[in-house]
Image (cartoon, rainbow, N blue to C red; front, side, top):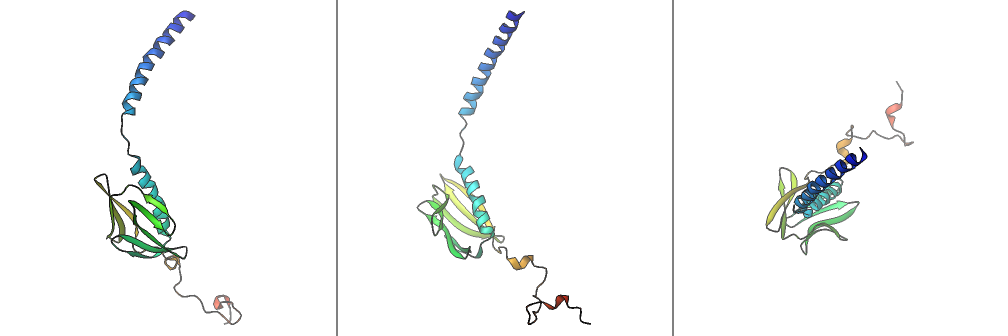
Length: 154
């Protein structure tokens, strides 16, 4: 009985080995473009930066904006999309790149290996802290620095 189990197990393993080798050879020949995945991850990081950036200005070859009270520029330098000052690389091996505005959004169009890509970077309007405030006017302050909202003088 044990010999029968061992032979049956060995036959199953040999059949599974052929199937797994065939699966590895098929999946190993699939070409995968890692640049597209890297681009998507980079644009997620760039969108996070642009979400809290303000005073954005768009030109054909660059976007300038203020981020953490510093002026930054996003542009194509030596086939790379760079955020300067400093050097933060968002795209590699880019043949051509330009920025446009579509429906109130800043969009980058770039070409790599003959294929053209288009990605939305941010909204033109941006986010301002005043947009989240419930009151339009701050209350008048008394001479002691307290607001007159809670005075019950009637």
